[in-house]
Image 1 (cartoon, rainbow, N blue to C red):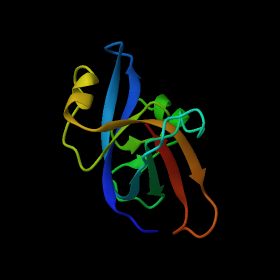
Image 2: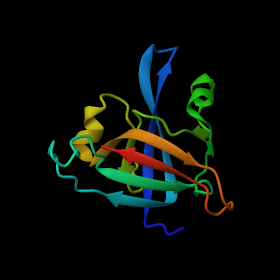
Image 3: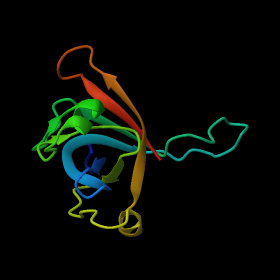
Image 4: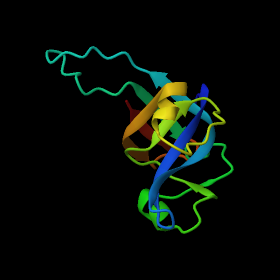
Length: 136
């Protein structure tokens, strides 16, 4: 699989202690990131098209381990894990920015996308297995 980028994912979770939504940052190195330029017309059927398609190999370079969204939300200590779920945020590049306040600070400083779909492609050889992530 050819890769062309690193990405930073911000996994959203509810912190019971503070009773607030929080975001955990994870950098994934060695993904394929493709910006799409969809024509937003009813005639073309593209009004809800994703703006980015990201292919993440199962063997992605990260200091964290993948958990599916249900398992991730159940974890008390999420610091060693990441997930891919609709509503999470993603930025192209290795971004050293923590969301500590409002999510709008991320959007103000970076070209951030919201994950809209995650498809697991767990067939074929180990080198071919990956996630296909759509984002707007």
